[in-house]
Amino acid sequence: MTVKAVILCGGMGTRIRDASELLPKPMLPIGNRPIVWHIMKGYSVHGIDDFVLCLGYKGWLIKEFFLNYRAVMADITVHLGQDRPHDFGEYRSSERWNVTLADTGEQTQTGGRVAAIRRYVAADELFCLTYGDGVSDVDVAKSIDFHRQHGKIATVTAVRPPGRFGEIQMDGSLVREFNEKPQATAGFINGGFFVVDAKRIWDYLGDDPATLLEKEPLQKLAADGELVAFPHTGYWQPMDTLREYNLLNDLWSAGTAPWKTW
Image 1 (cartoon, rainbow, N blue to C red):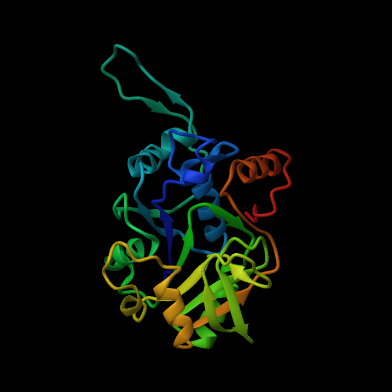
Image 2: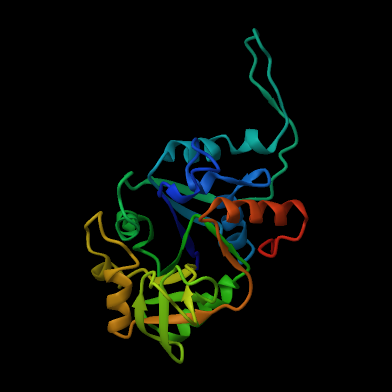
């Protein structure tokens, strides 16, 4: 059964504007590829090649990247002043992806963006969901198996880095409480890389574009006993600041990027 990965690509990334004033955050490059490409490669290595990208801020730049993907990956001979098509050299790409680029609104919040792409995933059993600004070596296939075994509506990958993210209070693997960005935190936090029931999640999301996924939807899922945590103790790194942007690029340049599992 085909599993799709939904990636939230609509935010403005205001905390990293020092890195680029021109690009939406998912298009900021790690090496010579945008971070969203790295995220997609991480899914693809687990057999997921169908993607829905939830666009917002400067979404046309993400569309342009994928519309021109062949040109990005191949050498081109351009015949100026001649009525001849361009010649593309060897197509250096192993990706066989299906990418839906969905405009979900510039001001829409995370929960509203997921609700806006319902028509692309509602016929499926489940779908993966993550943010367009963080990389990890999480075993996506194992997280899907874990989700199916528990039979709950949603699974969130639980990680242990800095305390400025949503904190997860767990009883075994069952999430009992979800607190977004507490002042101080200990234990596991929200690492994204969700697996979501494509039939039952919509009642929790509603249809308000202002809905934050990390607020009422996840908190209500936790209160109803419908959110479980998949613990991940490997590599996970968001790209929220210029320092983190430089860190990821330094790791990639050195050939030591832990998220490169392909």
